[in-house]
Image 1 (cartoon, rainbow, N blue to C red):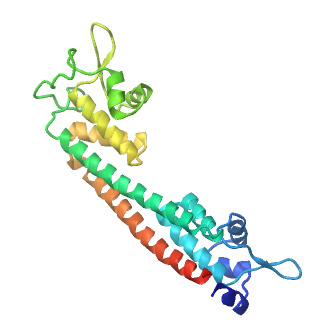
Image 2 (cartoon, rainbow, N blue to C red):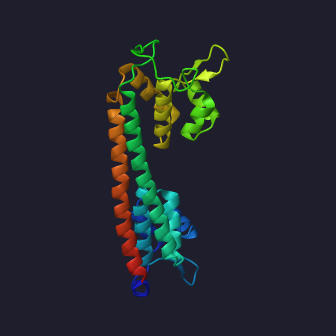
Length: 253
């Protein structure tokens, strides 16, 4: 079918570019990157494209919102190299990542629910703890190394979060070492989950401050709703991309 299309109509780079708000240089770049099949050439050396190239371009542009530019490029390059199984494997990986992101969001929501029963520490703009935390070690808290191991991160990361005001451990009076009580651990878990969800430290800081001030999940409901929306949008974009890619695969056959 692809050969019939190529013999039926010839397109210039500007013909492909115009319908998508792209430049002709972008079309040439896409061809060089393997996103589009290799173009034909006129006797004078000018590139000529076909409806098959137009289908490839539609597939790529439809894949980008759900998979990202880099993954969409790799998928299209594999298809154009007749490595369809590799392209499908790359798509599977992105779907697996989306599922993992959904699970991460669920973990964030669980972490926030765990924060709700815990009153916040005394301090400017904060409440006071109504009950003492359950000791996590003989010192009434846990040190930075064990907490880092628990979270699967480096101690340096926890120190970075502390400098950003995201966690506020106290110091052991005998050793001067950082001690994280139960509330600190929960806040560190929350920061960790938000980082996995793609939030930057400067975005997390006001969320943590809101949780400390309000003492619950409510301040983050808007952020969580937005996160849900972004995951749903990615999922739907993946469906759109799959439909266009299937159309392109049919035209190649």
